[in-house]
Every structure is written in structure tokens, then in C-alpha cells.
Image 1 (spheres, rainbow, N blue to C red):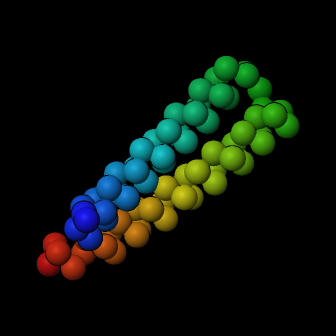
Image 2: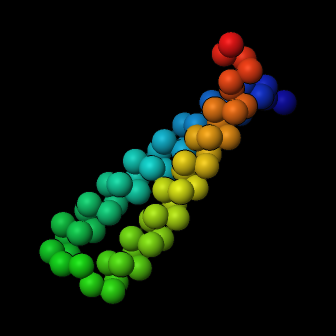
Length: 70
């Protein structure tokens, strides 16, 4: 079974990847569409949820790692 430190590190990594993917996707979508319409807004809403989940994973990862870092 993996250690708590490894799980925390992994969750933080996944969170960072999700936030990066969300930022890139939004910028690409706006660039591709050259306009913001309902379709773009719905895509941005989905990507915002992914970004928030990524942030939550980073916080959980930090909380799991923190006791081993001090």
C-alpha cells in the first residue's frame, strides 16, 4: 500500500495537471471560436469545475504531505 506522503504528492500532481489543462483548454477554445457564445460558455463552465476539482486535490495533497514536511 502506498504511503500517505506518496498519495498526497500524487493528488497534488493531478491537481496541477487539471488546472493547467483547464487553462489551456479555455484559451484554445476562445482562440478557435474567435467569439464567446453559449457553446463556449458551457465549455468554460465544465472546465471551471475541473479547475476547482484540481484545486481541491492540491489542498488535500498538501494536507496529506504537510505532517511529513515539518
